[in-house]
Length: 117
Image: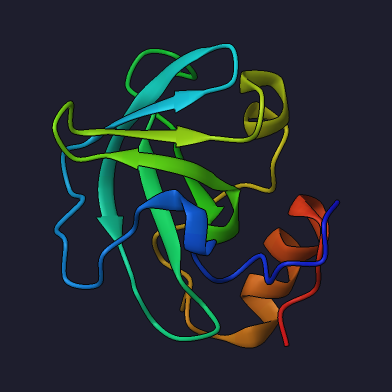
């Protein structure tokens, strides 16, 4: 893994603060995984929640903003730097949990490459 913060958008992604990404299609390295259900731009803890639809039985997944490789606003697509298999094996996202809690985000940070600080 690189040493860029997993909880922030990389400067090269094309992310512009205030852009509403809800509804954007999400593309893993090897194919489509679903659409963005919600996202945050919180400094130090930005993430996407993706509704995978039928791909993994309607499960939602949480992806740290640092997994975003590129945002294409014209096509309304977010491209990730992870494979479908990596995303499918990620810790389970639970909508009932308090996502902002550092302990909760820590599980995702460890899985995707870096602890949440």
